[in-house]
Image (tube, rainbow, N blue to C red):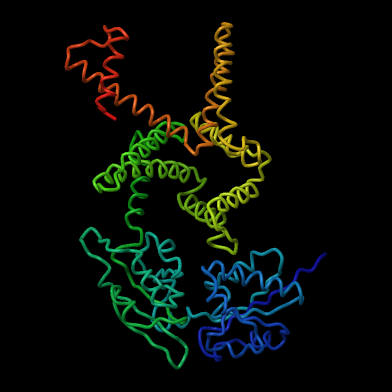
Length: 491
């Protein structure tokens, strides 16, 4: 059996050296290779000759990037030396993302030694029992998502800077409860440097918490109860969807399959609202807000059905897309460089291909796409591996070629062959559109829209002149059509 390299993880407690256990002190003394997540801690001096990762916090763009780099460095050191010691503030098991990543990494074996966390000192300072009070521990960096729908009591950690406090406060903006009460006057207790001679406890309000203290790496805040929960409006919407599913006869009868037409219809209505959006007219936002809401309801509806079946919830949906977007954007959340849109798309496709284990470039193209979009995506996938004309001048002649084949098939009287050649002609037109960077679905939709509005102009002229369209010959219709075009009506 192969012995994996070992990382021994110890916690330096919440404050001074008196909170560090004898087991941790012994492990530090025995270790030949020591690492500190940060030297900015009252007990960091107990770990001599240690390599710190403080420099990463200055150079990395995100905390996720910091933790990823820490993990790679520790795995590399453990692989080289067989065993290393990694010391973190507080307890290794309380809000330590770098430790979580190490534990999940199959390349190393992690040994975690128990330690006192800041929680014990916080409970003592606040005089509360966390179990009886149902206290929830929240990471300040994830407050907007981790505290969604929660009103308290909350203990919010990792409030190491005033901008973190500001972000926490702004996560609820100016929302009010049913009585019109906001969070501005909610009581907040700021806990700083607990277990040190500089311990400070400040009683303030939600509105003032980022103004009355200078937050540092040993800062957390306690909120007994919020008047308005984070993401309260979405939480209410989620609850409403569940109520309708449980009590409305129509909603109860629906299935994933029966909702497909509604999902498609709402999607197209969103597209219509987007196309009618006027950047200079905020009033056009109302239609888009409504249609996005209708589409969101369809998503919630499907998630609620799945939740009732015990399969998954909307939380799984949002967590899944959150994690996927992070994986697909290593140039934002990792150390991959992407200087252009083409590089971003290339990385995206490579990551997606590896994730899905696909064997064909066409895997993942939805079969239910509208035909023009289906053709466009299929051609684009083939182009990605070099199967393509170098430019539009290679694609254009295919339209004339396919047109001739349509006429030939039609002349032969073979209806099936004619239909096949029509398909080839449309495919050739899509190819030209793609080379000209024109979305054929949008282009055809716009053409149909233009035809419709012009013909409505024909109907208007005919009504004004008492002309019955159905009783008129083509010459009359053409004359009306040309008149509408000449006047520029309904362009």
